[in-house]
Length: 119
Image 1 (tube, rainbow, N blue to C red):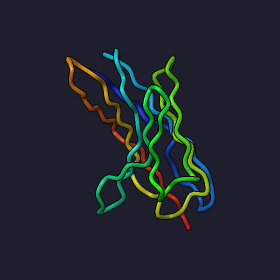
Image 2: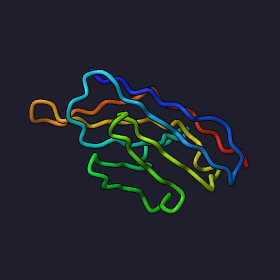
Image 3: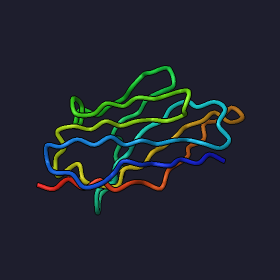
């Protein structure tokens, strides 16, 4: 099993910045990608940013320019740097990890961390 522990969420004013971290531990041997997803109240979970272990990133246009994702291979930790935060960025941010296991991709999720942006 893989465990993901997120940290860094909290309350911030609009225009502020936050850095989220997600550390993976457990049965880790062939990570394909790690990423962050956001779920706002009453809405579906959306991709915020994704990074492969080779450094290829996927960032939706809606947050591009305000989001930076990075991955520390040595620590199996993914970071999400957010700036110029807006109230609509509020939600539960969950970390996800894809790992190759027996020829298939398996996904693991963290518990999530709350980010609240006040206007």
